[in-house]
Length: 400
Image (cartoon, rainbow, N blue to C red; front, side, top):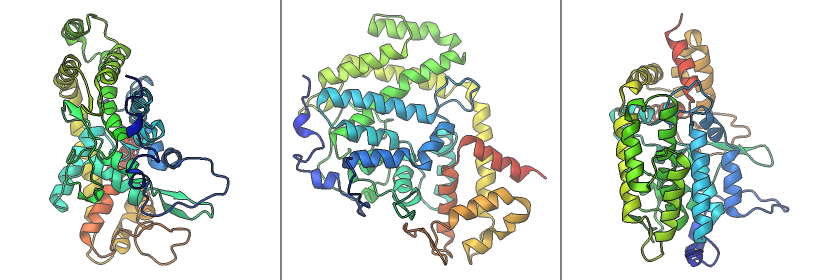
């Protein structure tokens, strides 16, 4: 039934409302601002440099020559579109789903999930905790990404709780028969691993499901365009024909079927859920994709290259720390790696308590003499890189 969730949406009548729109620090105000809380979040996100860099970050396939292969920024746009359709039909707050959608993958490293796994290995070894993009995304919007206010002072994004919760709660890799929001207004710092808690709002639940719907069909479409599935097309035809009564391989057909099924089978009592048939098909497509796309031989050379690139950057920066000062430690980079030195120094100055922090009103998050803080700053720095920028820095390191 249309608008079935209207009474449960993120609006002032929701008993969670004050928690939903809570910000750690109030935003600056304008007398003529006509935007809602979530519209302000949305524009703050799309004006951020982290959002802009998504257009040069891998979704699945690295550095495709074709402009028609999906990048990370296209993926978040697809999630925004799908979640908007779901939210509008069910009566949820579309402004909130839009804001969560465009922000949900800001924490992704260069080189997609492979890059995430590589950085996680560094983090577990040197910090004792894994690196995962949902957590990194929250830390990025809370501590790293900066915007100028009306006085040209750079400040943290200070997004609403609902959007921040949607970022860290969005993990779409877990197979679930239904999703319902949690009731507890927890500190988001309590998250220790992906999918630990349910999202706080129905809107974040919708984005979480939309994330999975968005990548399944599009990854197939791209793999076909690149010739990766040439040997598996008959298997794919049979899979779709047996479940959708069509052998046509079409991303639009897959998305429409899953979105419509979700909307027809969801209710506040049952949660956001698919029919058994649709849920089974979604899992079969996911298994097909893992078997024939994500783990295919064609991607393994690039995986080995990513490990070399990220390892050299991380180890080069890590080796400079002398136990005294982050700023004095990296001086040795200036002679041989001027670009790396200049860019990393510019990054560090925003988050350490150095003298004359003019126009910087953001939180200080690092101790200048802490080696673990230094290693963490390296992970933040690398995670923000685009694919091509990481390779550019790698080439500087190995060049003479």
